[in-house]
Amino acid sequence: MASAVHQHADMSPQEWEARQQLAACYRIFDHMGWSELIYNHITLRVPGEESAFLINPFGLSYREVTASNLVKIDIDGQVLDDSPYPVNRAGFTQHSVFHRHLPDAHCIIHTHTTAGMAVSACAEGLRPISFYAAAFAGQIAYHDFEGVTIRPEEGDRLIANLGSKRVMMLRNHGTLVMAASLPEAFLKHWSLQRACEIQVAASAAGTPVDIPADVIAVHQRDLAGVQLPVGPGVPDFQAMVRVIDRIDSSWRQ
Image (tube, rainbow, N blue to C red; front, side):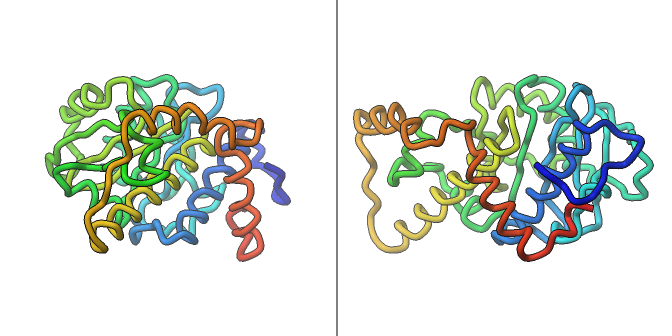
């Protein structure tokens, strides 16, 4: 991701690139209406530093996040830069568990969107009633609500309930997605959010009809055929970066 702002002298080009990408993602989420005051979290592992990740500065809105004010922290809670900002305790507790135990979880996104929380509060969870929901059939884990996530012991249950899946409905709470790259995690979240919005709307409109299992299998098999061959979510994320750049490019600082 090209930047008009030079990186800080005390960080690697790879870290600065990760900061640029994550700051852009926060601004995109704000633009899409997926922010929650100063809460919720998107984290990204620092390239070449397996125990370190970047997280939003607690107290700032997503619209205020920039590449340079993201906080660099390790999985044990030690801040690794000179950030004057604190880190949300719940966000660190939840995300550090996944970054510690899942080598493939380079980017983790947790939100409290209205549609995501609504579906997470339903006994049936996400139903395969739409194009987007069908893509997630059989791929979503569920974790019962235990209160705000600040107790380290909940981490073991989060990992156990997630299993081999990389999308989770936190019941009565919200959604959680993770992936090997930020663009892929972004696209997962976008698709899950669309699926939840459609389920909420369909449930209000009438009686939703589940897609048959054999059709779901074909759908999931063929989805890769409608993606550009540049990596999952890459063109989608790049398109949204261009959108926010036209609005306000201060995230690059």
